[in-house]
Picture: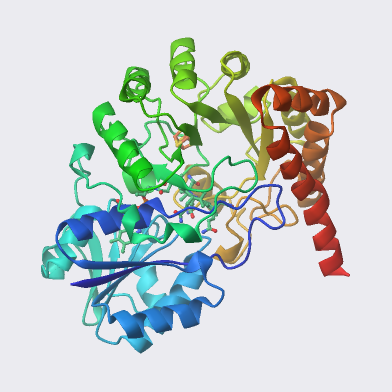
Length: 474
Ligand code: B12
Ligand code: SF4
């Protein structure tokens, strides 16, 4: 079969207004699905419309040229509207093709998707095996884990059990991408070609604001260390220079994480890697950090969320601030860069707790810090809570990104949008413009050889981009 996998563009440039860099590397989602389809001998193309100047025209041309029989889209909430528009266009150009939708947003209310766009099926949870069965021509009614159109009726097939042994997955098919189109060396990244790798799926924790269990569930499953290192080796052979782990729980089993580091060391391959999706502050110990540093880990993000213990507890984070302080000290000890990630607007938030968050950020020996405004992610406990309390503000899915500061997606009992916006600006000013921080970065930059990278990051974020925005606005 001829398969076209489409990565939709965001509705607008979400990163422009925020002090964060827009990542640019091939999608792991598309690479995993592509790998599954290639293994069965199908013809696969990936179309990354995040890179297209005119997504509609690009999609049209690609469908006309490749005549795909199956077109698969993947959507977050934020990219749901562009996906619907593109699916309608795809249907016009290829009336006979099977249109499938997967990804996190489709899980929340799959039936509702069919009213909005002419999809033939929505894929629930993990998608590799479902896609293989679809491409093999299995009747839709016999494919587990989908909702599909049967004439005018919508039918849901039995849930597909999650894959027990992740080593059975095919390797991500990064050969489907034109790597020359990707340049991750922007912002704080240190290489141009960056491969996303997942070493595990699922997360056993229950943070109220998180919806990550929607796709991969709460049961943590992991690839073997040998498989993870083999996957990395293949990515390096394909020309990637750096590895970013996208798991929710790289260190859920610390012994496995240490073994991965040991295998990297004995493999003799030297490369830099980052725990990009972050790890929990209570899931790292000294031995892991020491091994990780030796094995090339140069940066770890930690989801701290708040500087107020009460807010953390209400969010069900299950983390103590003392654990946060300790892990930052330890990570620094081994020379690994840290990014502390925070949120504003969780339940229990007040102006005082936002101050406490900014204070904690400044007290931690973190190399960088970021704050995002809470979005009530569909499928999370927080979304359900605020929906039942009538606190959700009517909004477009286009607004479901983390960098919204001028307007809130919820009516918060303790803070106003203006207070959050002020606290957001103050946070960045307080953290990045401290004399001790600036001095510390200079020294660290000289010691680690990152001075030029840091200087260009700060010049871009705090001088060039605000200036361009100001020019654009006048
Ligand atoms: C990597 C990642 C990114 C990367 C890359 C995204 C990409 N396009 O590749 C970057 C850093 C760019 C990114 C950015 C954002 N992200 Co992000 N990201 C993730 C992360 C950590 C992992 C996703 C991943 O690669 N998983 C591995 C793959 C294999 O799994 P998967 O994508 O779920 O796909 C599987 C199934 O869903 C299914 N499937 C999916 N699509 C399809 C399609 C078909 C046809 C089929 C058959 C099956 C299928 O099969 C796949 C294989 O099993 C998730 C968290 C998570 N744990 O999922 C957040 C996550 C998806 N991101 C999220 C958000 C909010 C964002 C941003 C909007 C944040 C922001 N800046 O404000 C941006 C917007 C991006 C944009 N397009 O502009 C949220 C989405 C919540 C929601 N309801 O929308 C998540 C869930 C994080 C969270 N817990 O809140 N993200
Ligand atoms: S925020 Fe992290 S630890 Fe908490 S449930 Fe989500 S993935 Fe798990």
